Amino acid sequence: MNKFDEQIIVVDRETIFSHEKNHFNGFISMEDQRALEIYETLSKYEVKRRGDMEEDEHYKQLISYCILENEQNEVLVYERLSGGGENRLHGLSSIGIGGHMNRIDNAQIEDVLLENASRELEEEVGITDVSLNALELIGFINDDDTEVGRVHIGLVFKLKVNASEIFVNETDTLKIDWKKEHVLMQETNYESWSRLIIEAIYNVGH
Image 1 (cartoon, rainbow, N blue to C red):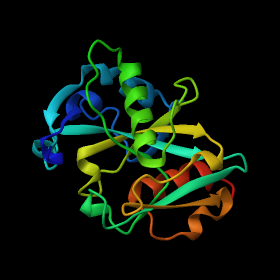
Image 2 (tube, one colour):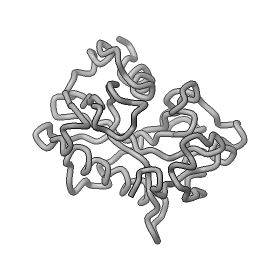
Image 3 (spheres, helix red, strand yellow):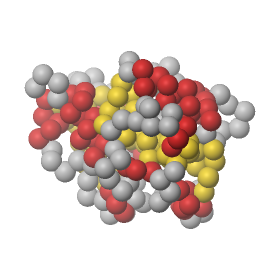
């Protein structure tokens, strides 16, 4: 199937941001009241054709975005290579593993989010049997200043893993590395979501 024919989960922008009352740019944690209210809107999702949504700013495509930390408190950083699907992100580094979400029949919204996130982790970096209890939703990421960002919103998860469990299934699309938290910002070529999250979470006090 052509990726543009994929049926994905989206939420109307007016709904997800409560008519802009809860709009934000950057990262907000689940401790922020806006994040809690945004989470409550996700069950109102619709299913749309991906190709129709890529330039439709009336909708936000829901994206799982999972940060992996290993036993040495290092963060997984990966680079999207030219073999990957999203041309607009080739050559950029990222700390978030994830992708578009699909409907799961007869599932509560929490299970829809967690199962989509765990599927992406298995597809991208070989993590199997992810405990849904271990996947922690820590906040949301939004960036309306970029073409890609205006039609997406990221659900930011964090997962503790052993570095030995991680491998790349598709070496033509991803190159991975582990970096200490305090040196993350030394990498300059991040896509916008990763840069905003690093500044919000890991660069505090540095």
